[in-house]
Length: 550
Image (cartoon, rainbow, N blue to C red; front, side):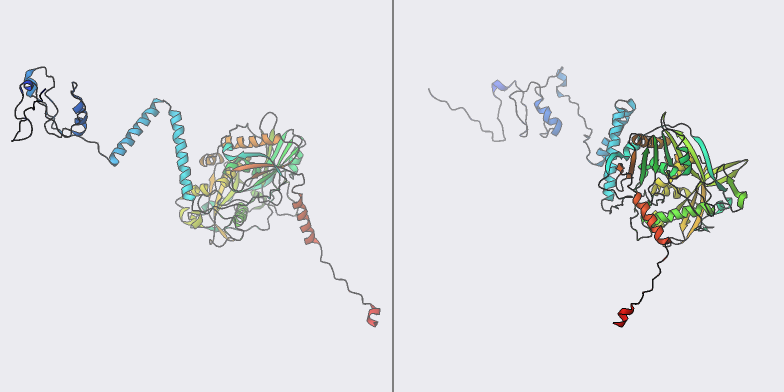
C-alpha cells in the first residue's frame, strides 16, 4: 500500500485557508480569539462563551459565535440590539461599608419592629456593649495607679467566714415594707434660722466652731430606750438610722466598714464597734477619677478628710439654729436620754419607729432630727447636713464660681464623687420621716487650710424627691436589709461581724468570740485611769548612820 501525501496550500496573503473545501461550504465559520477557553468540541447551548464574556467581556472584538444561534426569522440575522450605557461597576471604599452598615441597621430595625427575637437581640447588644465598656474602662485605667485601702478592722485568722454576699446580687433585690409606727420621740430641736438662706458665694459667712458642745453617738445596745423596749417586743431587730442606712446603701460604698451583730434569743442587735471610724463621714468616696489616697500624713488623705467633714457637719448643724432660749426650742414628750445635768448637749430629737418586716420579725430603729421649721400653722421637722469642698483641682469644679449660676452642675459633681454619702443621708431622712432635708455648701478658706471654713450657700430638698433624683430605689434598700436580716435570724446565739471588703464589692459575715472587742474597752479604761491617777510623790531616802561611820 502506497501512502499519498496530501496537497498543502500556502496562503501568501495571510493566515488561514485560501479557499473553503467543498464539504465545508455550508457550515458557517466562527472566528475565535486566542484567549478563549475551548472546553468542548461543540457547544449546543452556547454557554461556554457567555460564562467568560459576562465577566471579562468579549476582547476579540468579533463577538461570540453567532453562526450557531437560533433566530425565529431570517430577517433578524443581521439585527442585534446594542447597549451603549456604561457598565456600573461596584465601588470600593468607605461608601460601600457605610451602605452595608446602613442596610444592617435597617434590617435590625425591621427585625426589632417585627418582634421576631427582639428580646434576645436586645440582650445580645447589651452584652456586647457591656464588654465594650469594660474594655474601654480597663484601657483608660491601665496606666493609673490603683489605690489600695485598708480594712476598717483587723481580721483575725481564727474567725470563720459564714457568708459572702456579692454587691451585684444586692442591687437586684426588692421588698415592699408596710407603714411605720411611731413609738416615742425624745429630746428637743431648735427652729431653723431663715437668714442663712441669703448666704451666697459672694456673701459667704464664716463657719463657727462649737468645740464645747457635746454630740452623742450612742450605739444600739447602749441606748436606754431600746433596752426598755427590748423587754416588751418579740423577735425584734434593733438598730440606728446610721447603721440601717449603711446596710441599705452597701452597693454604693467603696471604703471598708464593719457592723457588730449580736443574737440574743429572739432579739437581734446591730451595733457599731467601739473605737471605730463608723461615725466618720466619707469624702470623695465614689469618685472614679483621682481617688483619695489612704495617707494619714496628707491633709487630703482619707483619715483627715473624714474627720474634717464630720466636724463641719456638727458645726453647721448648730450654726443654722436660732439662738433665743426656750422660745426657739421645740420640746418633745421625753427628754434627751443621753444628756447629763451639767452638759451642753447639741439639740437633737430622737424618734423611735417600728416597721413590720414580716409576720414574725419587727424592726425598731432610732432616728435623728436636727431642726424644726415654722410653716403656716404647723411645724416641719428636718435633717441638717453639709457638703464640703476641699480642693477644686481634685473635685473638678470650683464652688465659688459655679454655685451661684450653675448649682445643678455642683450637685451633679457631688452625686458622682459622694454618691454613697448622699444616699445614706437621704435614707436617714426617709427613715426618720423628715419633711425636709437641709444641705449646706461649705468650703475651705484656702485649699491648704483644713481648719477654717466658710458657708457658700444652703438648699432645701424633699427626701422623696431627692431620692428619685439620685436614683435611690426605696424597695431595693428594704430588700437589701430584709435579706441581711433573714441571714442573721438563722444564726445561733452569739456575736458576729459583718465587714465590707476594702478593695472588693463584697460583704463577709464572720463568727467572732463573745469577747472579741472587749480589749478596746479595757484599753480605754486603762488610759482613763492613767490620766486621772495623781503623780506619785518621791519618798525621802533615809540615811544609814552605820554606813556613814564606815
